[in-house]
Picture (cartoon, rainbow, N blue to C red):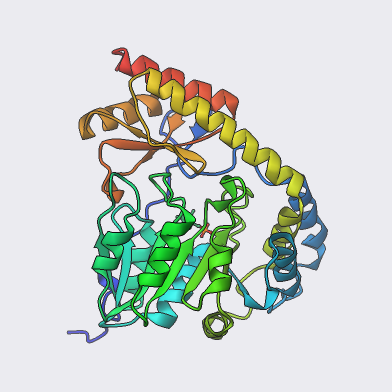
Length: 361
Ligand SMILES: *Cc1c(COP(=O)(O)O)cnc(C)c1O
């Protein structure tokens, strides 16, 4: 018998399921399953990629200096305390690898992002799920879920797939109440969709136990390029850099992200268009008898009577060429997560759900 076996925890990982991108036999589908920006990347980002194409034989920057400085300038941060990753997924992975191992606990909330569990297990640590209160992060439940073994606490704010968020005072209370060996990770994948919100940057500045992660995959429309970043205390960033591959980001990815973050006018347009269409979509669904919590992100979590109705609606939408996201894997079997698309897509998905609720099957 072979003695070749993976590290503990790895076989317990449930594979991440991405949003579907096609339906067999249906053409011209509208993909509203992965929270992508319906307007795509900024034209400046596309141009920046075209400019680096003839340099593909060159290794990229190892320290991501130009991108870190661009991020620091635009957000008013210290470039020395920024780390860039292959999506924020990689930064989450670094955090788990560096700070959690066998015997350690990684706390995440009931309807939290799947990667927290996956990365915790990959590091050999034990993910610990704590309840939310009506699909909202519950600080008291998180604090009650912490032990002397807790090394990391992940919350997404706004959260995916609920779309809800908690205020700065609550986040601060959480950071203040954690056991001394625990690091709070504020996942700000959707921070850009909240007008005037810094994703927790100020809290990172004020404390030694908070790290913020951000991504270019959502508002910036660069999911395919895989760029994310983290901001934390210098000591933490130094630790993460030791396990980061020297060439983790490709030259086109770096160029695209740098141009994207500097195109603040494009960001502003996408943010305001998302806010307008998100309100419209939530209200249209409500009129069809499909409620949702007030979303702070670029999707709406549509709630149905039960799992059967949610699944039937999903199948009906697919038949009509509309792909949304089932979230049973996130403990929300009676809900569907619908990305806020462009105006035509929002109208189409609302209209089709209306037909479904009116009895069409
Ligand atoms: C999409 C998402 C991410 C980031 O994904 P990357 O593409 O790896 O940057 C992180 N956290 C949450 C909650 C997300 O929804």
